[in-house]
Structures are given as structure tokens and as C-alpha cells.
Amino acid sequence: MKAVLEAIVAEMLEQKVRLGDALQEFEKRFIQTALARSSGNQCKAAQLLHVHRNTLARKIVQYKIKRNR
Image: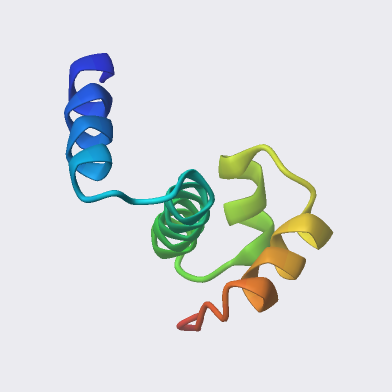
């Protein structure tokens, strides 16, 4: 995983991606993947992410993530 992350970081630096933008995009994708794996169930996704369900709900709104139920 370390080598993959290093390659991604190198590419992002080449593209002049700002750290804040990269972190937001990573977090959004992480949440979307957890929601997909839990079939849209926020409680299960929160468990996968090791965050409180209220934190997850707030981030879903923050990132305007659409959930499939």
C-alpha cells in the first residue's frame, strides 16, 4: 500500500494538487466506498470507517454524497 500511495502522491504533486483538496477528495472517496460496501447503511459504513454515525452523516452532507438505498 505504501508504494501505491507514494505513486499517487508523486502524481498529485506533479499536477500541483493542493493538500487540502487531496485530503477532501480522499475522505469523500473513502466514505463513498464504505457506503457502497454497506449497501448505503450509514451505521454499518460508520463502523467500517471507525467513526460515529453522526460524524459520518455530517460528512455525507458536507461532501454532498448521494446514497443509494
